[in-house]
Structures are given as C-alpha cells and as structure tokens.
Image (cartoon, rainbow, N blue to C red; front, side, top):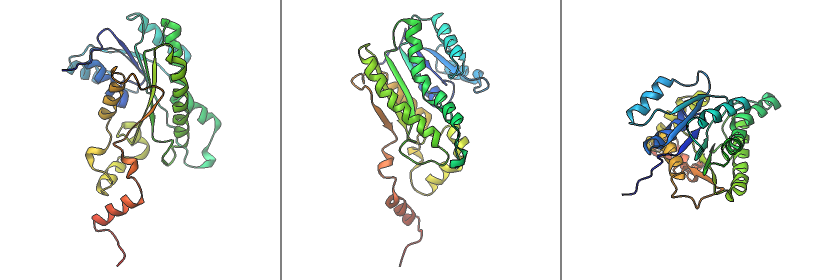
Length: 274
C-alpha cells in the first residue's frame, strides 16, 4: 500500500479556513503535515475549524489572521511560521477577491487593481517572502484559478482577468524556480459549490443545472474534490508536472454546448418542431 507522508513538512495555505483552502488542508493534515492557515478577520469560525481537524485526529493548525494584500501581514505570517519551522515545503495561494462588474460603466481601475492585489499578486509575493525569510523557495507552489478566463460569467470580468494573469505568472514562476528544485503549477477549477460562488450567483444556479438535466448532482464540483486534486499535485507523484494549468472539471466543458443543452431539454419533454 502506498502512503503519502507529510510528517515534518510545513504547508502554508492562504485562505485555508474555508472552501477549497480548507478542503486541501484536511488532506495535508491527514498526511501529518504542519499546517499554517491564514484568514481575514471575521471570515471564519475558528472553533468549528479546530473541531474539524480534531475529528480527523490531526494536530491543530496554526491560524494567522492576515490580509494577503498587506505586506506587513505577510511578514507577520512568515514570523509565525519561523517560530515552529525552518522552511515552508508547500505553499497554496488560494485567496481570491470578487469585484463584480455588472456593466462596462462599472469598470474602475481601482477595483481592477484591488482584484489583482488579492487574486493574483499574493502567489508571487508570498513565494518571494518565503525565500527571503527561510532562504529557500517552497518545493511546491500551487495557485488556485478558475475557468473564468475561458467561460463567461455575468459580472466576473475582473476576476477572470486576474485569474488569467495568475495563470501566466505561474508559468514564468515555474521557469524561474525550476533550477531551485521547485514545482509551480496552477489548478483551474470548474464551477465549484462554495460559499463565495453561491454569494455571487445564488444557490438556485446549482439546482437549475441539475433539474435541467445539464449535469448530475455527483458531477457538481465540491471543495472536497478540489482539495484532493491539490493534495495529489503536491504528493510527490506528479513532480514531472511543472508550469502547467491543470483543469479540474470532470471534462464537462467538452460537452457544455448548445447541442447538449438541446438534447437535455428534449429528454425532459421540452419544445420541439413537429
């Protein structure tokens, strides 16, 4: 039986107390990793998160309140890690910010820059900060993206742009860090049923796509699915993968087209031409 052991290794996950970040953290915890999870004030119920890791039989993570867009907070995170570890083995850049843009007139340069500060730049800045504070880069760096750059979502304009830049910078980071022995990849997830997605688009979206027969309930991505994919990428078995944007979406975009939607409607007894 093959087991993956992260005992003695330190894993840093920004935004690691909710959604995909939390799901990934659970997998690393079960493998024995020392976890450092950042969160923004008021964004998580830490008691509930602690109980979750306790139920796994895993050590309690180190929680650090930090805003990924603030340099002083980044230094604070590194300082807290330095109290318990000599390096960071895995860094998951997971925090995202959704400045929704309903119309072209809503575009503001300040809003775009803020989206980039939260959704793009932390992957670069935290990676550099880790090198500055510990003398080496993480062996694994993973940026969390979405299918926004290739698919239209109402109001998702700036988020999609920030993810597209994240993916591009991830490829360049992979080249710069390869000689250091690091692997840098981006995981692009399809539509995931998370709190943030529901807040933007509403719970009815998921019930609609299932009821319309476009996909089945078991093919709706959940944070746990994403967390397993992140863990697998960092497991050591995929070290030949570097500088890649990996799609995790059950392959559904291939069949997400007008013909498939028409067939689903027809199967449900929808309108058809006599």
